[in-house]
Length: 143
Image (cartoon, rainbow, N blue to C red; front, side, top):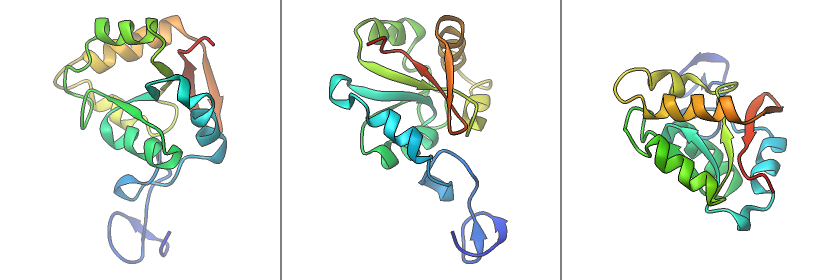
């Protein structure tokens, strides 16, 4: 990080403590990155996160694919809840990254499409959260 000034782009400004790398956010903790890399070859996506800004930070840190639920800011209706559930049943997604850290993107899903909110609610109702270095992970893989 550069400087200690207000957050935002530019010299002397710092990023937030968010999910990692993109838009001047801090990188995920090493323990989170290690969890995402665990058994990565067994999954199409090592994780899913609401919004591409959130997903990108984790993907860049882990070097493995992370699904962006709801597109750029979590408001696109893709994937649908049924589509996401199908991918989980097929064992294609290892973790869902909850809103414990960098969760602002999930809150934006309240405007526009509610597909990301439905997915988040379904995951929270059906899987047990684990907090890894301040990040909430739901293990969807069951392996």
